[in-house]
Image 1: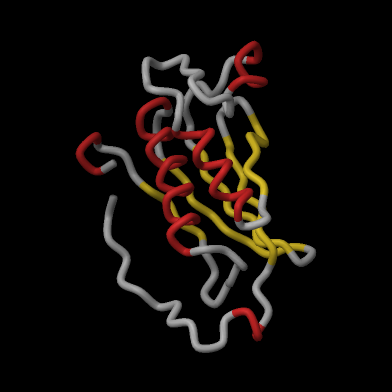
Image 2: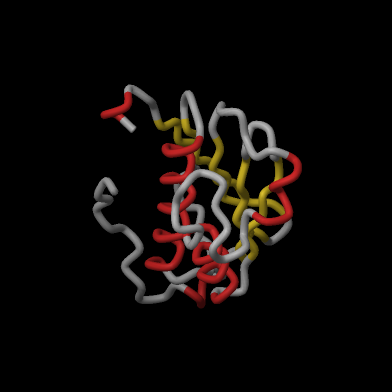
Length: 137
């Protein structure tokens, strides 16, 4: 993002835990951030919140979004309107679903993707070292 003079705005509360495989979640969010970089414009936002036993992770940008006629196909494997492989969003959705979550395009213009995952309970995370050093993708 920095190389293209764009910013990443993050709003993730401390201590928020979702029941998810860290590598799967990291890869899915990476796909969404990469898509925002490739197809969007302006600042990219990454936000998370808890609501009703669910952790919601949002990734969006200020670009033109997804044209209405393409909305039904954005998660189809092999579909690409931007010259890419068309594998990223299909893979991201499969990774999130493997952990019992959902990945949706919640708003087409500008694009806003949301990941829904169950909130982790205390017994889900006992003995798991959650604090890791983040590395830029």
